[in-house]
Length: 116
Image 1 (cartoon, rainbow, N blue to C red):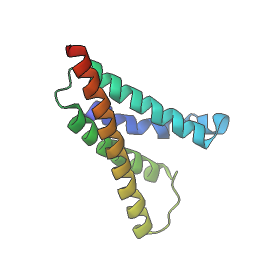
Image 2 (cartoon, helix red, strand yellow):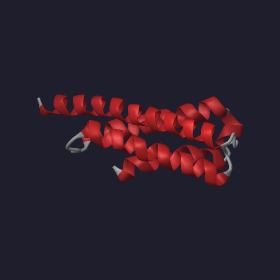
Image 3 (tube, helix red, strand yellow):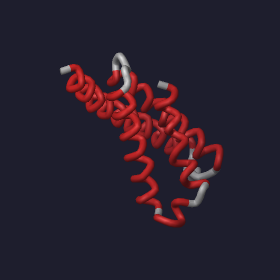
């Protein structure tokens, strides 16, 4: 779970190496999103992760916490006050947990297909 969650550092890393200035904000976000989705699905689906939905849902929560902490510490996020920042953080945790659950369902289906 921790290994999957550490992918939350991918997006800030892509920003730091300057990918956003080359391909743009949206493209960088999509690269981070699809790379994370692919690693989660293939890692849990082809690996022997016992409960992929739970594992990747919790990985999504860790992903969001790392992403949020990193953007705050590096100053990549504008400060709109405590309330709005907490709301954005909660939405990010929910979004990332949802992505993790969706990835877990796909990984689980890969595991089932491989057992046949």
